[in-house]
Length: 232
Image 1 (cartoon, one colour):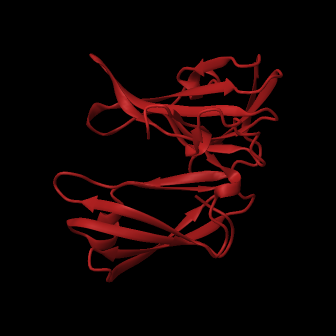
Image 2: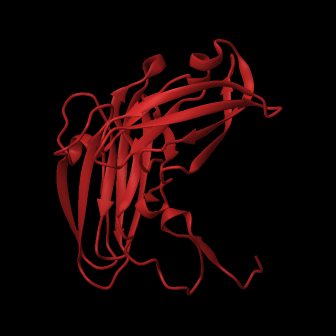
């Protein structure tokens, strides 16, 4: 990039050249795959902040649905947020602060808006001397993997230094089964596992390679496939 050019990362990871039009409202909305209000391993305490920015010239109403993990969500908790043009709202500890969950909870959040919307989230551990975590950007519903398509998950690890978890989101109104086939660094398959994902919900499986191979493996990949519906 030359010194006279400027670039910005827009919603859903789209790189915009300075001066380009901002993205329009996403058909079907966006999905924040994972949010949390729960305790983790080694005494960790996980929370999620949600950030919404109205990028349009008109007032916006953002519709939010919380799809709770591991259970079907035929009637999910719903909330609305109103945003003036070009304004931002941060919903701290969103599952507690906005949705009102007092107990431990984990959820996928569906976000819909008729105006162009900037969306991101940050899931983090709350420690005595601060927080640490990562941003989890939205994925447009239109970019989910369809039935019969393959999703490739690379860089999986299971050893004394690191472990890999696997999360799958089902945005459809019926349960789906996602089949994962695992490959080693040489490209040879070493295991297959089926994961049932409830309707409009998600699952997370910890130490996914240990469940398949039973021992350490320094690098692997998985190919995910479902014939029953879209997923991510």
